[in-house]
Image (cartoon, rainbow, N blue to C red; front, side, top):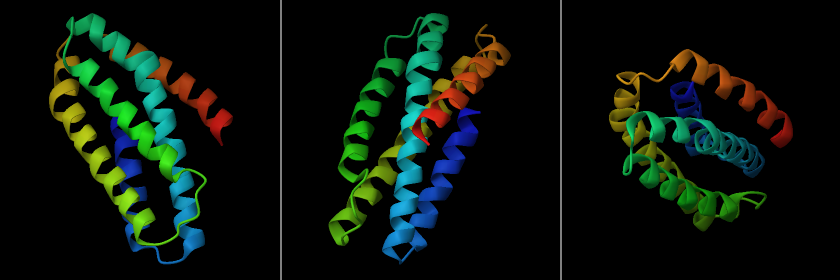
Length: 140
C-alpha cells in the first residue's frame, strides 16, 4: 500500500510537470499536498513505530522522520498558494526531488528489512488502510 502511494504521488508530480494552466497546477498541488500529508502521518503513526520496534532500528526511522519534517516545511510553502511563476515551480520541483529521494531510501533500504522481519505485514497493512480512510475524509 505504501508503494502504491509512492507511485501515485510520483504520477501526480509528472502530471504537474506537463501542466501549463495555473488552475490545473493548483489542483495538482492541492492533491499532492493531501497525499503527502496523509502518507507521512500514516508512516509516523503506524509504520515507523512498528518498524522501529521490529528492527530495533535507531537509524532508518529517525532519518525518515527528519526527512518528513523537511517535506512538511516544503508542503507548507506551496499549500494553498497560487502558482505564480518560476519560484513556485522550483519549489514543486524540489519537493518532487526530495520525495523521490525519500521513496528510494524507503523502498531500497527500509522495506526489504521490514519484509524479512517477523512483522505481520497483513495486520500492519489493515491498520494503515483503516487509518488512511479516516485521514482522507478529514483532509479531502
